[in-house]
Each structure stands twice: as C-alpha cells, then as structure tokens.
Length: 188
Image 1: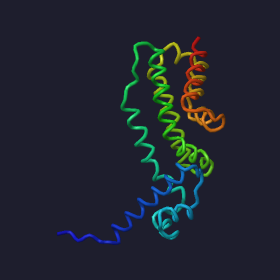
Image 2: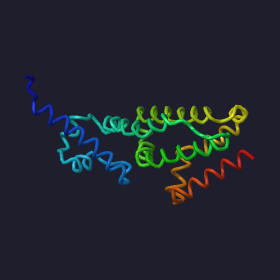
Image 3: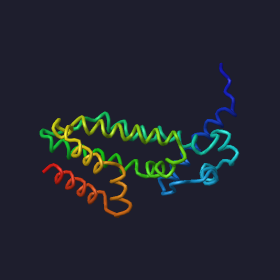
Image 4: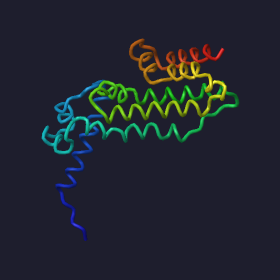
C-alpha cells in the first residue's frame, strides 16, 4: 500500500485553488489581479502563492489550460454551410462565441503583453491560428486578395470583438450583427 503524504496532497490542492482564484478574479473584471488578491481569494497565504509560483507570470502560464479547454471544442467542430457565405457566417458565430468566453482572460493577457514573453508568444500563436482557420474555409480568390484577407482578419479579430463589446458596449447579438455586416460589405 502506497502511503500518501498529506503535505503533497495539500500542496497540490493549494496550487489548484490559487489558479482557480486567479481565473475567478479575471472573470470578474480584474485584468491585473495582485498576488495579494489571489492569495485572499484562494484562502492561502501570500508565501504559499509564491512557493508554488515564482512570480505572477508563472501563475498566468497556468491559465493556458483554461484557454485550451475553451478553444479545443471550437477547433474540433467543422465550419458548416453549403456556400462560402454560409460557411463564413457560421465561422463568425463560432469565433465570436469563443471570443465571448475568452474575453476576460484574453483582455487580462493583453494588459500584460509588454512584460511577458510567454504571453507575447501565446498571442502570436493565437493570431496565427485564427489566420490559419480563416484561410481554411475562405475561397481561394479571397485568400489571394491580400488587402481583402487582411481586412477580414482585422474585422474578425479578438481586438475588434473586445472593442465592440467593451468600448462600444454592444450586446453579443449587436456585435455579431456589426461583424456580419462589415464582412458582407467587404465581400461586395
């Protein structure tokens, strides 16, 4: 019989609580929660936070699994539609639904890009993935038209979604309508 060390189990549980506390604070709108806020929310001491995570960037790395859990189902679901237009509208819905779920985490990441090589790398991978997915279902003539493709990529970016939702204070439905209309106008 294997003897379980209570300290190890408690340490693993504390680590999970710390990560969950950070995610909760970010989802509540704290784009830059402090270690003190995280420790208070997790009901652990500040020293415990830094025993598990050498700094806040290390802690931010842990939330990437939360992002993966949101993105994976989207990637696993194919874009549907009989026409290029239907596929594009479906892709807009999928992308904006994902953006809405990721918005608090992504907004917090954008705040810390300047101080984190890891977050900059994550952002670059995210943008590359979004561009790849856009190329995957758009007709070849649109992809080959570089200014048009770049305009579509810009309109369908997280930053556009964030501006529509946060800065322009549009509802999800209204923001989707703006994106659809913008894309349709570009494709005329």
